[in-house]
Length: 290
Image (cartoon, rainbow, N blue to C red; front, side, top):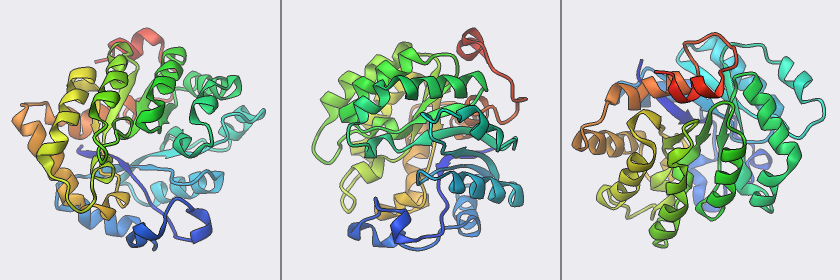
């Protein structure tokens, strides 16, 4: 199955999406599965992972309901308060096999590094890991060092770094990003999504060849079997179409001779455990599962 490992759905209400500002007017409407289906079809992508876009348990429930209505939603990455004292009980409210992980908008915290260092947050991630639930790490390049420390400390199950750690492409931040990003090489329980690059670049003037060095660095650090294709639809629409995002990764992976079955689906199935029963993996299994 060819899978888009990172996209979003929503019923738009301005109060629920404060991160969508005036420059993102194209996002200020509903985005639902039927529209994504036509976008995916142009790229022969059969399924997707629906990822949370706001910190609300109601959204997790809604995304799971969508996944039960539409089989093309292969998995859901929801939201839960990791620091909640009743986290176990909160997780029990979602017995759905479509629930494969969680995410928090760490980048929007007043102090992202402090958030990641909080003992309650790390306990929460370990609770997810005991349940074989993944955790998507969403940070900007400025907080990659703290993300690395978090990832090194929480190594009992899969963590997935979103959008290559959001390098500051617009302002030429390649060297600083690469220095911190390279440290993830030895953390074999961490995978990386090839997503979100065009929205970190100049929205109106980005060119594919200027983004390839970031993709090459991701390949060098993670290897082809720890990389996942993600469109970041509909957020990508502020800078380009679904097809343009797909072609960026498709053309690059063709030139590099990569295992496309893995990049465009197999790795997502494995890291999100879409084809496995919901049991915890040991650290050894995470590192050596084929």
